[in-house]
Length: 261
Image (cartoon, rainbow, N blue to C red; front, side):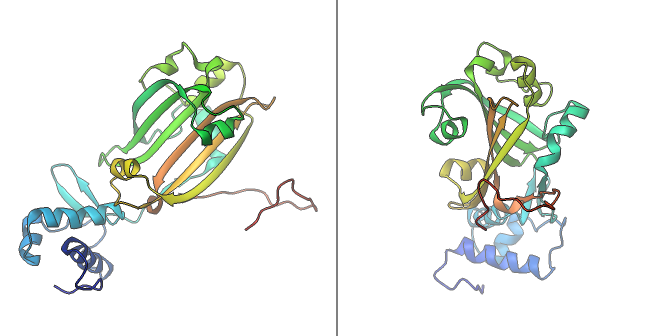
């Protein structure tokens, strides 16, 4: 077995590199099933657990995906697209969830103290109580986790309502919050962060330790500047594309906060 990683790399990493090279060179095409674990174990003369580790690396990198009861396939080169400026209008039109193409699993709903990053976005003291809804979103066909998300809502809006229940709301959450608050979402701010996954995030998303994620903190305000919701979403960095389309300013303007890059 040869490997560009050198002889000191663990065997599963060397195997992952060879399979990665096979995919690059077209030996295994997008959508094609990889050989069975037993066949790979025979090819590389290693145990099944070692093969499973190697294939796990490919899944974490987005090169392969497992389909329950069928096998592991070379992943099609398709990333989820986030078009932030179009999401609200579409949801107002069809009355569906913002990510209706994914299966939502609400893992927590109820009061908790706002984390520091959320308190800063909301403009409230750290540890102020908010109503939190945490979720994991899955591909409906492969059942693979695609996104970790959470929404943080002021208690004066959501306390004692169905938003404290671990059930998927019947329409986009922002529409529910508008109904409860009597205010409409008017202005949004997205803060994007590229970073290493935490151990918990890596385990949930099937990433190797230290894998990269994209993390967005989305702050939505009413016309009177009241914060209606702060949400955050976390994706494996290699599975998402951010698309932002906008009109270009035609007049000279000095922004309040200039772009640094």
